[in-house]
Image (cartoon, rainbow, N blue to C red; front, side, top):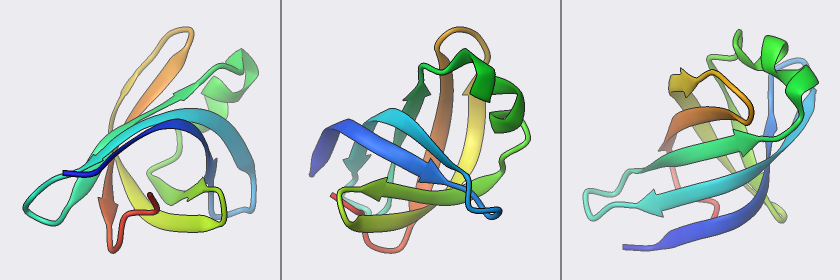
Length: 87
């Protein structure tokens, strides 16, 4: 099982990019999932409406869908990835 903890970004459909801290893991079943933690409190309103996007780690990207959110400060999004993991 491969894991990644560190800086990342979430890119949404309109091109907006949100900086985040990622805690992601690739499971033996071939899927990957984890959390994106956003420290910018002003971004929370927009992030509540996000259902999917792309996680950027360095130059690698991976498609994600939102599973659930933890509203608060910091704002935490639980995601599940599809396709190859970007880490």
